[in-house]
Image (cartoon, rainbow, N blue to C red; front, side):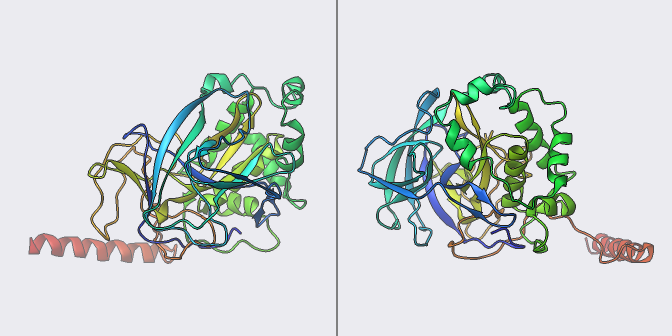
Length: 377
């Protein structure tokens, strides 16, 4: 449910070792497909399929070109809850522990990956993932569904995509479609339209990342509310992009999990804090499968970062300018995570009043403090 504020756990949740110390991975745990204007639910998780350790898992798109990625994960602070979600880079192909997949009736899309027993502190598992090898030029060859019916109808997942991943709230404001059309007016391909939506929402001169927001009114859908307030946390932005894409006829869903964290040079591993819990978007491209997009201001799935050492206990990690390292920010996560709160560094200061006198008073006090500091020094 998209609420006014979001609370997340303190400290490291897990660490992982993967191919590169300069490029981390988003770790997905579960997806959502149905939105009523305020709350996401999953209709495609009505079938459970169990797989033993190292058993190959069914791909969402068997024809998609991919690169195999091996990741070793260590659990530090297990997320609680009734479902034992297990986290991995996109499109897990196998785990070294027994897992259960939540899928739709046809079994062609996985909504969540869970372990058969609760995750434990210091537990380790390895996962191989089939990460999409599609380049921007590859994705740019895919037409809009309305312009390339053959490509879409020949995709084996076509019926499931239409049934689950084009749904929109019945009372969705007409403003959402109108805005999506304006933002993508120059797009000639689906990929360009997706990038247009992502770039508009990540524009920090227009939208602000904030973990403390006014509640969404009951009579207003969350996307329209974001367009008016222009502030929110990651689930606001993921929701806006997914629903706008659907309004344009593009299959989309939102994903919950963790952003990449930060690289610890002492541990030689990526460390993921509870504050890295995150929501982002996946858009389906025929012949390529689900592709990640991140429309939250300050984040990017093109997430190369410079290696850093672990922050001191209790310290707030400051991202390097130009880096997409986002440790210390809060993102929407599974509702069962243990709560704690940080204030986002992206929140903008503001005057208590807008009148000229109050601004003059503020500036006068600031100058006096500055003058006093010089005298003391």
